[in-house]
Length: 147
Image 1: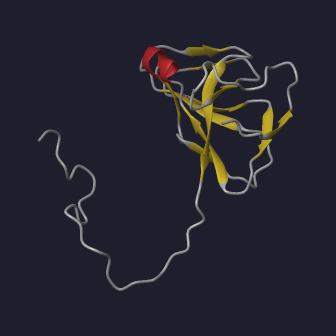
Image 2: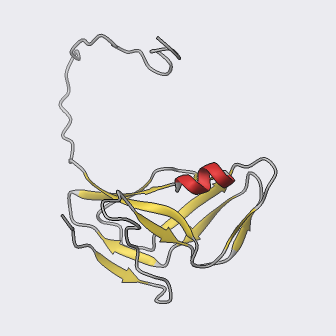
Image 3: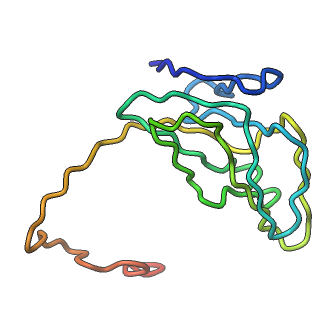
């Protein structure tokens, strides 16, 4: 089922984001500029679009798996969160985590993906105790590496 989202094309020479394949979970975001990311360098890259999300939805900027595995390129604050009331240009904070190789980005290159998700507006209720579970307060690494 398709959802209609208002999109302002700030860079009309770049294609409007779309799914590469039917059923994809996200659309590609493109760079509006050329740049080189040296090892361990990061940059905020404009995408040339702004969107108007309906209330009750948010967008996540997520890395592209091919860039991650082949070149060590990732979204630093991944996922980046775009709230429904944000109307500015979508930017992607990319980082090159490759230890040796620089990565060249050309205008129009697909640099990240945009995923639309439904979100609930939480109402917090103060309680004295939380219900018990098998996990309890076990956090980082509490389940071990293997069972």
